[in-house]
Length: 355
Image (cartoon, rainbow, N blue to C red; front, side, top):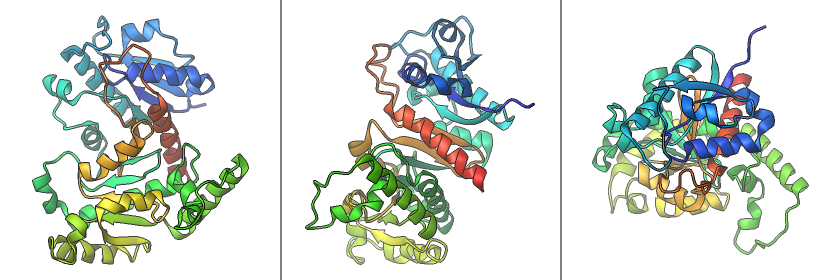
């Protein structure tokens, strides 16, 4: 009988909070640990309680990372963990990967040739990657991410927009009805309480919330998610007064894509679109560049949001925070985002298995 593939956890930079949040998750979820493989430094794996999770050592077996003290050797080990996870997933050893946070600066010092982890998995697995975020109150996909702002207009193409819209549609459907936090699906099912003049103090029982989540899941599966698209310019160009990209390029493409995604908006003013999602008018948002999407998301969902790489043959998620070297090893790091990253990975695996 074949052994079931495990969910791989990479340690991230071993001097950061990646090891902390992994151990905290294992401690809180011991019944699920047997389905996990933890990839990290041999010396660390030997001395910690993995609660039955498989230990997969990588890198220099004598390396003893010190919390809060990043090194090139530690960054190289984080890179080795990514390579092991990517190869193991291709081989069927792992079902998906949840990555711990890495330091882009220290990875570059170690010779890492990619801007981030998203680009790494796109190269190792193939596919057309999209960076997206969920798990908290907002659901956002980025058209572009680690590029200079001046290069964004060159990416306003049919292919790039189609890729991003398809990715956020998949994520919205896969996570509809999710129970962590006040997710977009829950607000969608109860959005009338956010309308002008409606009471915002109506108590919601656990049973009512579960029914709302189920209703939202069915609703999104039936009609498809309502996707709002940010404009490039202030006020989405203000009918051409503040820029012509929306009129000449983006909206014509969105009009064409609406044949496949009937609830896809035309470009909307980005300064109000995220508030409109929070109020239940949209299920998901497409942002055109990194800070346009991540500034509001990290303001609202800093401790809960999950980084998801879509458009690849395998699932990869990650907590949406950095290495936090300043608090590593001190028991101060929140594992909420990591826990949500595990849940989203499981949801995406389940959704893909149904296809």
